[in-house]
Amino acid sequence: MFVADGLNIVDKALNMAVLSLENRGLLREEAQIALLIRLLNVVPEEVAEIAQVLRNDDELSSAINKKVSPQISFEPNT
Image 1 (cartoon, rainbow, N blue to C red):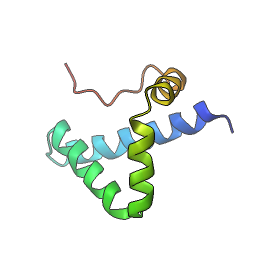
Image 2: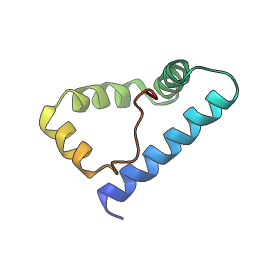
Image 3: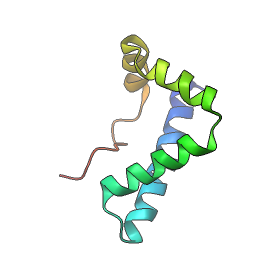
Image 4: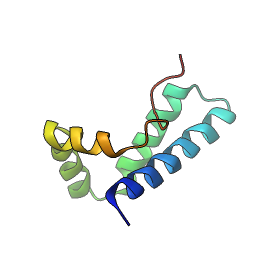
């Protein structure tokens, strides 16, 4: 599997989770917050810390975001 495929799979799963929460009455932003809190509580603290360090790496973020399908977005609906 290519990195882009893995990222698209994760993005689709996250979108499905957010949409499911929206369908249950949460606002999009609330759904995203709930999902993030849940993720931070289910992964080991060390993993969350590593993810935070990697998230702050501009070069890595740029490379990852280039590989993600453009139609997948976690931005609020406008």
